[in-house]
Image 1: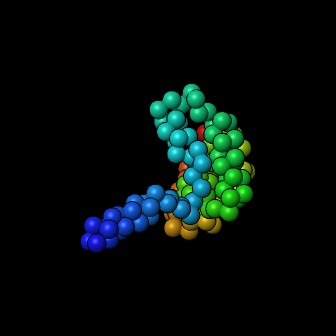
Image 2: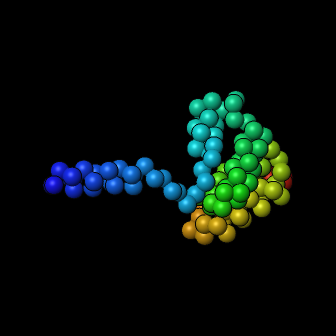
Image 3: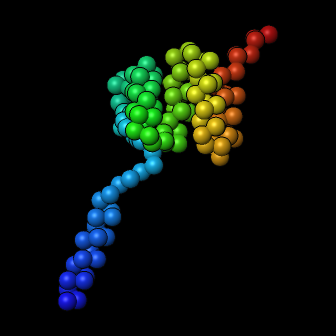
Length: 120
């Protein structure tokens, strides 16, 4: 009888571990980050923008939240491709969704999106 109880508890515990119900939809975000650092030629800003936008849409369709960092990453890719208005919009969305990131995001905005200073 004790073996049956122990086996049942073990099965339930393992079933609980196997049930990965994350509140976030990660999509290809993690693999995209990996590629951007290890094989940057395979993850140009334009490719990353497309993938991040797709992941955001899939998250909405599945009724899940996007993970922290996805909008800030998207904002930096917009900035890298020269689209500063979309970059600012994405960075502001990151702050809205994750207010604890405000200091970091404000720093990113001031360093990345300010107009270059005029040479005198």
